[in-house]
Image (tube, rainbow, N blue to C red; front, side, top):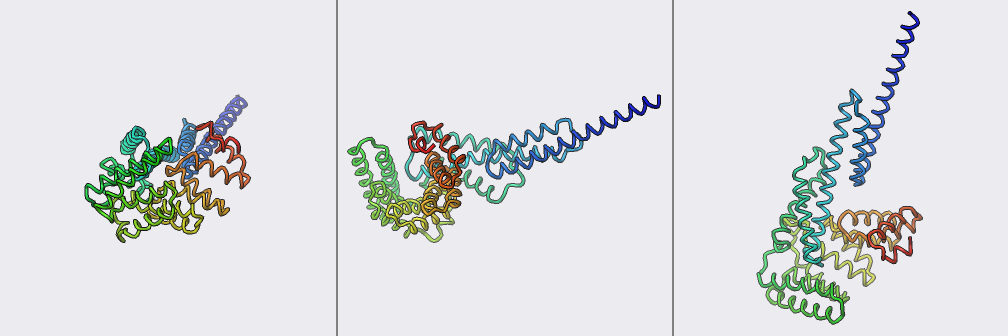
Length: 365
């Protein structure tokens, strides 16, 4: 009888130790999942981070005494969802910022973009914001929501007080420039540029210092590869800027950011790389979300064989609405030069998945 009692007691102890070990291991794995998820979240891998937090919560199923860890996992999962929606909203609004000033996509595409941004805004407002949002994250979300409201209310018209006729002609010039960019033949392209230049001329007769009219003059010259004339027009724009321009409520829609960006492209076409680099720095100081400027600066860094800076700028370009295929291609080239073949192939595969006829990526893959 004593032996039976002893055996039963020992079995209970062994079973208890096993359960304790299982709970301990589950807690350790859940803690690891929490740390992995946080690391993924810091690197903006939102879906992967949410999956890691869910794995941690699943490991704690039925495990007592880990309420604090459960709360942390649930809070981080909610934070990941909020930041993912905020990031998607940012990408949509950032594309709208850029296209509102120049190079508008087809109207149907812009309408889809506007609708997507509105849906994301509503989703984001329905979610409880995390209590530990950084100041930068909070400021970016506030800027996105503010700019979306302004864009939906009429875009860049609120940037400056201007005569209605000058604004109307500048808007007409913008549409003609879009026609020129999308023209399928050289005669169509030349005719569209003529119509744009006529509208710009009429706008400048109404208001010679009108910022956007002078901007479109420079942009028209840039698109026609008349880079010195474009630089002159963009420089005139920047010379008219008020010292208090940065205090305008529409800061992230600042036309000065786009002006610096396009003047930089003109300098780059003239092989004046230092001036181009300086203008891109100015553009990103005015609008730290201007994806195409990150792409252009990344290309300059790559040209100067500064791989770490190029990679950082290309990654920022992808986060801020630059042309994804062009950015991934340039980043893949840098990875190839750094002999990071797996990373390069991954990017080329992503490009070919989206656009199988992308010949440059196909040849390098």
